[in-house]
Image (cartoon, rainbow, N blue to C red; front, side):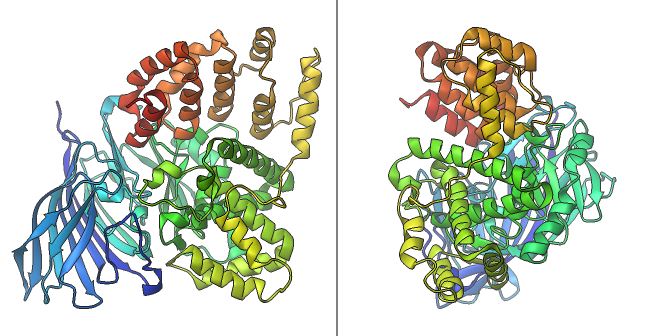
Length: 610
């Protein structure tokens, strides 16, 4: 087997405000004792062994007389630790704690009283939860392997020993070495040069949280959309992706007009392989994007709006712990929708609100009440286990509620000031509530009470007076659907993806097989190239045992690894013994191409007895 082996060198710095250093139940870091204001990674990327090997070197910033540094790790092999004292490296003692199912292992390093730096020699495991390794055969061109990271929420510790808490903010510089012909990229300023000489340098001068450190390497090309926006992708999809996301520069301008300057210089996008488990990941300067939103009609560009919105809410102002994730995702969903309204009009924005609201109600019907709270009580449960539409859509509805009560002009002014005042900081829900009370509620008394704010943030479910988005366009879709069920025709020339999704999702569960066939013959849903429309149709086909869609369902599950699209299908299949048996057979074929996070989610659905 050909061996893919190359070296990586990275430099990272860090800072955080003491007010943000609230206790994080998901990190062993003790930032109030010692923090790490600079990190230098020197790594070898070994595709054959599916392993990163090398060193992580930290500058130390002491906040007292502590003599130990506490870091987070998961499945890391620690060979040696050293401290820098009087201009030389000296080996020092270290200890790995017991393995915790969610948190991994605490790494404690003796740093003495005089050391300025610490260096850790380590290697990752092939099963690192924050990395996926694809063989050349698993890529489109089948020429080169592909590797990418997914550090959110607490997976950075699986590929580097780090204080893996969003309360810490990091800057970094990097130098990466790859085989010639491959391109390495990071969540930093990526080179647009066509040269593929195997050596690349990066700089991320703005402070970010550890979960936003990202890396990928593969056969990538780059195509510019504007002076500060470009797309990185495998050759087969580069042109389609650049065309699909041509509105991105206009999105940046629209967001700046509402919420202040874009502070990250460039905004580039990386199209990942289909195994990427999410729609997107907001890594600063280089959002990671699923290819499933390259639909050929630009109707799924709201996902790009979401990842861009994180440049203000999430990356600029960050949740201090994963209990506060709604501060990232609720604000981002709100800003995303405002971007869509600014560019494409209120009609489209309201349709997307309504679809999100439907998804939220579906999630809430299955979740325990405690998991429908915005400021969620996690304990040491893994944050991955509670990701749902609650922090996204309930958080968005809360901000829509505040906008309705105070008026858009007043609320926009408040949000813009919020982004300015907390720029490049990590904050808690308590800090947000204090800021809200002082800068909005007190300035406009008797509009919204703190009791109402607490109901939204700390109580399960939705308040009775929560916004209930409904689209007139969807009402027209439903009228047409009723007419069609009675034998009439559909008038769909102007329908968007959103209207098609509402149509399919609103079809009665007792729809006849004759009508299923009639729909499929007329609109070719089974073979739709739009991954969202195909997903909705395939889910319905499982419920209705619509056999003509079964082969497409198999191929869909084998070629797409985005959790949002595959896990509802596995969940539906698991409802009957016959379909469960079939689903397990398909899953075992698909598993090698799924990201570890996708495997975890879907094995819980298909093998609940484990």
